[in-house]
Amino acid sequence: MGLRCRYALLYSVVFLLGQFAFAGITVKAFADDIVQISTTILPSAQVGLSYSAPVVAGDGAAPFQWYVSSGSLPSGLSLDSQTGAISGTPDASGVTSFTAGITDAEGFSASVNLSLVVNSATTSVSSPAYGAAVGSDGLANTTIGPDQNKISFRFRAKHSGVLQQSTVYLMPDHDGYASGTGGTIQVTLCTDDGTDAHNPSDTVLATYMMTNVDSLPSPSRYFYVLQFPAPPTLSAGQVYHLVFQNVDSDPENNFLSVNALYEENWQSPTSPAASDPDAAVLLSEGGGEWYPRTAYTPIYELDFQDGSSEGIGYMEAWVGDQNDISGTSMVRETFTVSGSQINVSSAAIRLSRIAGDDPLTIRLENADGSLIDEGSVEASAIPMSSSSSPINAWAVYPFSTSHTLVPGQTYNLVFQTASTSNYQAFPVQKGNYYGFQPTTYFQDGYAQVNSGDSWVGWSQWGSSNRTDGDLQFYLSVTP
Image (cartoon, rainbow, N blue to C red; front, side, top):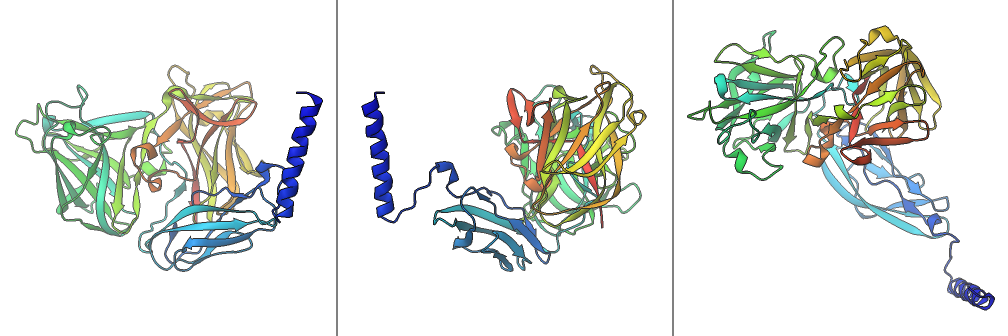
């Protein structure tokens, strides 16, 4: 570009800036500095419980002015005009949509459409763990029909209310897993028998018939939605059973399977999500007694009429993509706490030891890397194995004292060891792509790896920097 052209371009820019200034319009030097709103998703709330969640500004000139430009917040909550925090105590359940707006000190504005789910006050049963809290090395199927197999998904309800529908993970069209038409599957929701065995009782709350499952399009035939004609009512804290029985005229040739998570090395300590009797797969063969299928964890979702949901919505283990923990190679779960504050007393991860005798270091830190707690688990607590035949086990570190995690704050749980040893870990996949609700998996964070340069999400199936996987980890929750 010649000198004359450069001067002409500069004159044009200066002229335009002058015109904007004459019109009373402030022009920022860089477009990246224009105010925006970073928050796109809000954590859910619960009726009767204190709630606080920030709506965060990106760029712009402080101080900011926050407001609701359309719609309204749930009853009992308000938006702080100075900080952007939504807080209060909601007094009614439901889903509310609204538009949050912001104006910065230079007069620039932005807005974002948000939704906030408020769950019913009668729905909550406290969980002993915060995190993915499942152990899995892959999927395991159980056939319904051959040998008069009956299956029960046993669960303890966390919510009270009318059950609108349930989702289960089926295998209706693979040789050995299914045959013929897939059968006619009767699904009954039963109460628990109240014994120490926690088997299904004869009390049936609802019945649903599954037919011609294989004729459904994908993914509907795999992630099957049960809608009971007469919706039952569940009570939080009570144990129930989803019982599957093949009532087809030829169940030996017309059958399908239900899928569950499977943990090969089932030993103490086990994950809280798989502890008896809260989540288990039971089997009855040939009309015989019920017995639990050891190391099986059911995959299911329960959706209530008030908008609440619960279940276990992990559907795959990325066992084929283990990452090393050795020297500068580390793994972590990064997460931002939603809902109310929680107190945690220990941290656990499921992983394998491939080489060396150095302890595994577990570090809880703030988003900026500053230390909250750090300790180690002796190598002897994890069986020695090999990368070709890994033996995964849970490593648990009790914190030096309990710690309070604050809503809206980001934390990292980092796992590392010396370069003279090697551990390996892999995530489990959240079922969000297949329609499972965030309440059925850990929604606050995701797994990351660091090979010495930076933290990135997991790579799987040709896709890098994924955010739909969680380490098999949990933090123990205390009152």
